[in-house]
Image 1 (cartoon, rainbow, N blue to C red):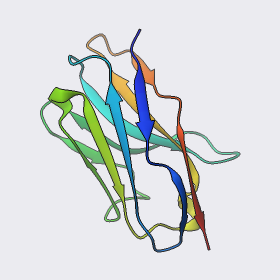
Image 2 (image 1 turned 60 degrees about the horizontal axis):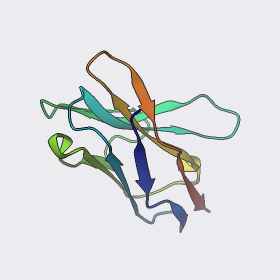
Image 3 (image 1 turned 45 degrees about the horizontal axis):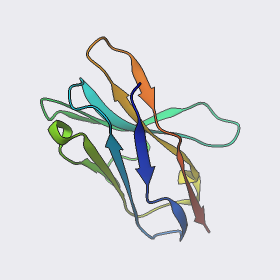
Image 4 (image 1 turned 135 degrees about the horizontal axis):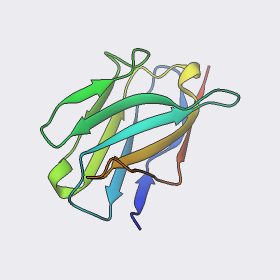
Length: 114
């Protein structure tokens, strides 16, 4: 069983910044990433990073959010700048293992006030 531990969510005003962290319980996997789910909406991609270092962002966060971390050390960060009220969501850490199975953290809530 893979475990993912997220931290760093909270309440911030529009235009502010937050940094999320995720630590995984295994070291061999294809990728780690961040997804989010707002109330009444489907879960959507925020950003992922694979073992080769390739990073992929969702269109709504490009230029504002940055995924970083050492995938080989099973840690991942999400730096969120210029936050908007529409960024309000529960943010989930994801890990895709070597057989393409997805594992999820419990989620951390981010609330952006206008």
